[in-house]
Length: 533
Image (cartoon, rainbow, N blue to C red; front, side, top):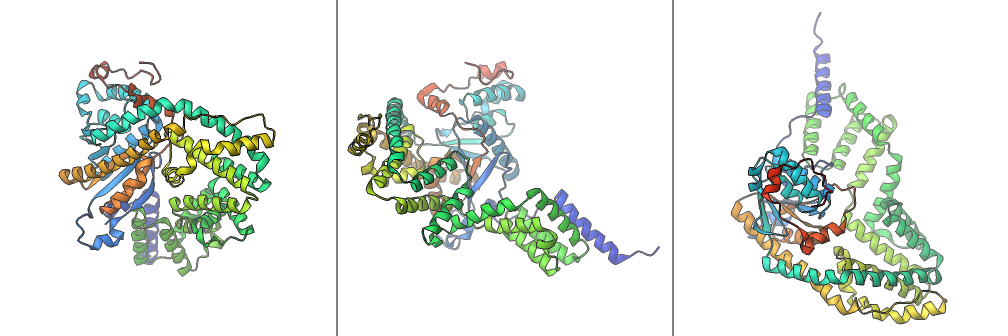
């Protein structure tokens, strides 16, 4: 029988496409290290990527630029076992995929390796004992990996010892004040919450209820954005100042329309249909574009737009023939427009603007100001303040005096004949300076961090390194990375369970113990991590 060469060519094209999509192909080496970093979602998620090559700094002779160096900043969820275990796996992945060697950490100075403990027992025994200590919060994810791994790691502490000790000393002082201060603030919250139904209008109460539902995760961020957007439209606000919020609200609507399993199935069917339509040159274009997508050189929006354009050229109506794939492409195109950090800023800003419009009198506004200041103070005193709330605290420092609220609260409690009374105490006002010092020293430590990071990376010659620190340090550190010309990625370990802050506080109080070689040597791999020492 004669060979049908054109038909055979179509079959080869079909097989090439099928093999690529369902089994993968080798990837081309990307030009940008930071954009090529991919993190398995079971271990963590990339929150932000900054590539110095995309900026004007890449074309200057600025001595502060480090064009060939990349820092992966992992946001540490202190003493969260799940997060620490995932971070260990994330680091192991980076060692194997990115040839990572250098891991720089807060909380220590100089060489902080635990590799020497490998000499005391085999891998299985080390894993058992290290896992126990990880559950107790007495070692961290990178320390766990350093104990159980069979390859060299360079764990390096980037603290200024004097600053760290000063910070720790202030911690002990404020920690002694925490419980009494939080109780006082909780008592004030009871008064404020009792006044809200009396003073707030129905519209303001409904807004407060929606925000609480969002914070309690019974209302999604997309639904909350849609709610805020609708109020803003009804109030005649110009939403041009809130582009990400507007897009995200639309994204939430689109998400409800997409059946993601069906979209995936339809994508595969679409790829199959290309087998009989593309020539070899077009197949190569698809494969090249797909390589760029998998390597992180183009985002999902660009990739799926390419497929959509290809469908149009081949007169394949995606919306008609593959409606879920078409909806998914629209979803992706909207999603790529979102800057999460800016989105959250817009949410907060629009909340403020809406409330200003909803307040019918000075009492409503004043109660809201007290309520917000109270929530920020709780973050200050609990030592769980976010960078955004820290900025609010600094900008509104005069209104952070609980004593200045007493007259308003007392007068209105009497006016509405409430059983609760505003408690009087100087515990917070008199000691607020100590809490401020705690946060200031935290910021001062960041200057030591960047100094030691630059020095260590220069001395080691490493082109890629990990920096592990709590998320409070992220805004300050990423800004300094930019200023010094580093590319960076911000990564969060996957977490499904809330951190027990009491474990972390016990570590800071000095209850953390060293991992002794004799414990490793015993090989207590069957010990339950919840057992007492």
